[in-house]
Amino acid sequence: MDYSLIKKDFNEDVSKINETMTNLDIQVNNVLNYLNLPTTDVVTEVREREYVYSNLLFVFGALEEKPQNQLYLSRFVHACADGLFDAALNYLWNATVEVLRQKVIEYDIVYFYDLVYSDAKIRKNYKNESDITKVSDSELLQGIKQMDFINATEYQQLLHINYMRNWSSAAHPTRVILDGPTLISYLNQCFRIVFNMKVSSFSLQISTLLRDIKSRKLDATELNTRRQIMTDLPSDKANGLIQGFFGIYTDDIVSQDTMENIHELAPTLWTVVDESIKTKIGLNYAQIKINGTTQESERAEAFLEVVKGKAYIPDVFRAGEIDSILEELQNAHKSGGNFYSEPVVVQQLILVTSNIGVGIPKEVKFKYVTTLVNCFLTNGFGEAWNAQPYYLDLINKFTKDEAELALLSFFEIEINQKLNYSLCITKFKEMLEKIRSKFTGDRYNDFIDYLIGFGAEPLTKFLQDQKYKNNFENFINSLQSYNLYINNLHKEKQQ
Image (cartoon, rainbow, N blue to C red; front, side):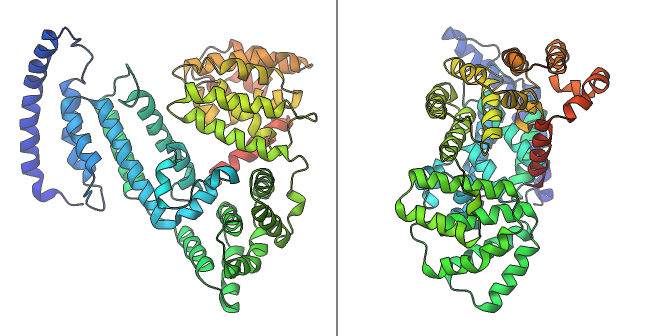
């Protein structure tokens, strides 16, 4: 947007606001003194507020559309003037979430739900646009990433802003002080990534296809054209689309025309889908078999028959149930009320896994270990102390293979990021001591000693340490768990 015509008037008004900030602070502090309330560390310094106001026009100038009806952005600007940067960040995030929700609704809300909620028991609670307010922020970000609205880097940037909103804003009790450059940077990132978001050509093709297969029966020419498009899809786009097909096919209100369209298209799409997604759909079938209706189960099985994918039905049906609980645990850990919600969910996980005599199913083993490690490390600000004993109980029961996955979990993106925080580093080293007994070789124990003794922060600096490169890198790279993490990282970068 072009604000050049009002720049002079804007700067004059900003100058007047800057002059009144100090006087207002003095007057409010007098009132606080009368009330015997603290006056220090209450609001951000005036110079930080001046920095924000002097950069507002530049950042808003990058918007491609007028931010009309954005009440939260108006509150953001007011809160900045008052020095309440924690409240300002909360308003900025609320504005960002509003825009994201609207973009998802305009694209295809059902497809979004199908991608985010693979568990039939949870998915049935999300039917239309009104249900999007029940979607957590972490689920919303994960969903728009899977839909290719944002790339992996943009996802991490928004995840960080959400993290800071949860733990440095008025949304929670905090002593963290935000400065002007940081707040302006967050505003700029939200505008660039979300408000100016462009849907990719692949995403538009997928949106059109989903709309068409649900609205009418496609003729032979249209089906051939769609098959060619699917053959040329990158694997990450094909992965999302096949999950959308599965969700549509198993829906209660699916029409016969839609099912026949999927019969014609899904087998071609299945040939370009990653093995991990085929396994995931097998898990989805298991979850529906456990939690869904007879009709849903029959349609899920019919879908796998259509794509010749029945080999991906897990041998152990508990895998679907465990996968569902792990999803719930991840969401609980990322939520604002994790101190209360985590213990309940992890106890469910203990109950289910204790009834499995053959160990954790291979289909969910990687997710099982990385989820437990991630939660055990805390969110970096404080422990969910009433959940920690349960995490320790499960970690102590790790097999050697699971312990090796835990040892190398610093390769997982979210865990890697957490190792920037002192509390998470301390918890990671505590976990290393717990799993030490699972290994018999000296190389494992030598590496554990090395990590525990590594004093620099973030802990992942050890990957550049010459001692690691000389003594341990070849050993780590030779482990089977290493290949699992590298393959997972490759998939994350594709999404």
